[in-house]
Amino acid sequence: MGVKFSFNLRKPPRLPVCENGLYLIHKRKDAPIVILVHGLTGTPNEMQFLAHFLKRRGYSVLCPRLANHGEPIEILKQTRWQEFYESVRQAFLKIENSKHGAPVFVAGLSMGALLALLLAEEFPSRIAGVSCLSPTLFYDGWNIPWTSRLLPLAYWTPLKHFAYFKEEPPYGIKNEKIRQRVHDYYQDAELHHLTNVAKFGYPYFPVTLFCELRLLIKHLNKRLPLIDVPVQCIQAKDDDMTSVRNSTYIHDRIRSKVKEIFLLYDSYHVITADQERGAVAQEMDAFFNRLLHKDVSVTVKPVGVS
Image 1 (cartoon, rainbow, N blue to C red):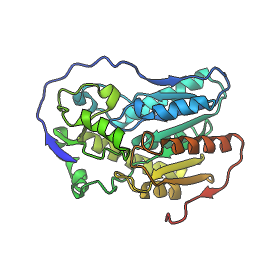
Image 2: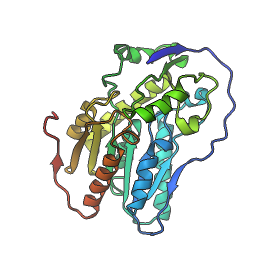
Image 3: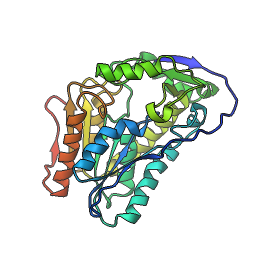
């Protein structure tokens, strides 16, 4: 990831976002519900395959757009992690008020997985299970430069407000055709003249958001031992951004008796849209079904994962 500094102090206008998320409500009133949470600087589009798959399997699916995603990057970079979490929390409370008693599952990609865990910790009696997809507690994947270790220092300097990382290949995608489509959009993107971010996500990553993610991780670390709902972690063995250590860290610290790790071997970080997205959807559906029918094992950890 290349670093870019920009000292543009002009306040940008808010943009009209075409939609506030992805909502596929099943006609059955008692259908189980899945809340999908997209990643930081991402978009509900990265969850589309999962959403339509789960809808066909009989679930109502909600994927809210996280706070200020789709706005100019100058607005997004000022957002606190609590605002991202509130986007998920409000989506849950809204469906909770309208779908009385239906089982609720929550799944998140990358930072979205952390927000999903927080929701389960806050509402343990109402969240039936969590699926963590490429959870991001440590940026320790094979494509992360050593300079990322210096990021905590940026938190204490004013430079954090003016520094951005430019996304570079493979963009968390192993599938060459999908990666090329992302590259065609990202390669010529100008920092302060971004278009279609509501659809494609942001080619730049503000350092202020790394700082917010760090604060979110610090908060979640204190809550992990309190989480007692069933948890599934799905991660690519060759994740370019976050290693399998992220899943094992969660698995080993939550108090849940029902927990499992499922590894992928032909994907990178964005497993909801990559080569094995079908396997991801099937494993999520199988996990949720086992929970619905109370057919669960105590704990499953793949051989070779320590």
